[in-house]
Image 1 (cartoon, rainbow, N blue to C red):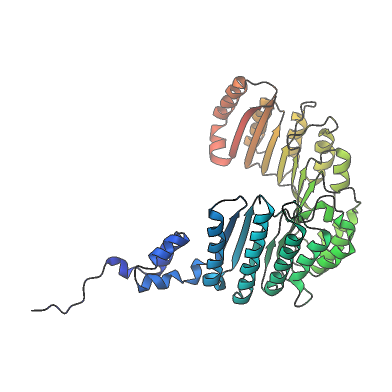
Image 2 (image 1 turned 135 degrees about the horizontal axis):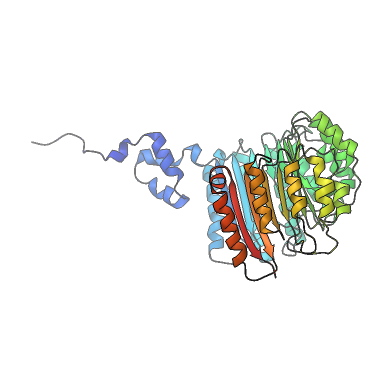
Length: 439
């Protein structure tokens, strides 16, 4: 007698859709394609939009056999799943020569063109560290690439909410062309976050450009703005005050030694912006800008400063005296400063007492990172004050510089300090302290 019943199916055939989607989520493209061959249900899971909403496409900048597959894989993805894409990041790692930049530009032209036609939901685009001012970017390739990106931004401007072009290194005109693309349809852009740190080439005084001010006036819903100090001016602050006061939460400002930073910005401009945008917090990141006179011109008391980072990047200069900054400038932010990062070579001045007093003065300071010549006793005093409730630090990351190769004595003292405050450190602090030879 023949058995007409259907063959028994594996338990995998009854896997709930949510479990199947989660399983596909952890697979790479190759394994997803293979899994899609298992059965009809698994093939359908392969085309679930939730799997393809976020994408990082990486191109190697070095000649290799894998380059071709990288470019082909990127185009394959956009053709099949580009319509689902919401968050896109593109990486082009250290291009080696003009041949590769040309191939990248041609691939990006096809990729962005296809994506512009099929996608209507992209909200986030990140293309970082292109360094378009390098010689490997020939003028024609560079011009065409910027044109391709600009065209794509015009198509996406209606729904693009986040744009990160950090490290693009473009000219003033090229940069304003790219940013203006976001307001192409309505002469206004409602993007909430843009990152244009190191977006313009070094040595450009963007702060004095009417074209840049006109471009920035088209943004009407900025929540987070990241840029260099060579873009900051009274005019820009007035523009932000007029068009973004109701939305603006954060301004991140990088100030590098090679960027122009000698412009005069009035405290009244910062005060007006802080008054109109009461939620605003400003974060400053200084790299090799350490002289007190330069910092005093920039760090005005009217700025609603939340965090500051001062880094010498292992350079040393006898003119970099940090005591006036610690005792005169930073105390102005005792009611607002929450994060403090200091990395400098202060072998010519002792700063233990000044730094400790600054920490105790800043009533909201919860994060401290210091790489400097300090005594081990500084760490013990800091922990003792924390144990007594005289400061609210939650994170302590200290690298104690020493001029000796051997750090065994410092290591022993630090172990004793840890034992003394072990309960506090283990239960309440993110704590990392080491001695580090600098010879």
